[in-house]
Length: 99
Image (cartoon, rainbow, N blue to C red; front, side, top):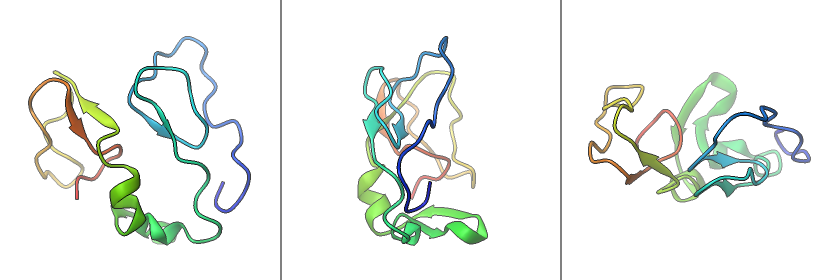
């Protein structure tokens, strides 16, 4: 919740969640709790969240770096077809865009 209290973000008892960024810490290898969006200022993470622009900027570049791990079978590119790592277990940005 932007500027609010971290709520129930993930509710799927059978899921195996690893190397993910969520508001609250979810059990699993390499998961990171990043908290709620910065108080009313989500644009410190993303270029234009309200306009649907999820490109990382400012604090988001640091916050989401090296959380994810690329696994064999993952897409070789991000949402804009920028290359992602292609070596199993290589650190990557969490999310759809690689800066």
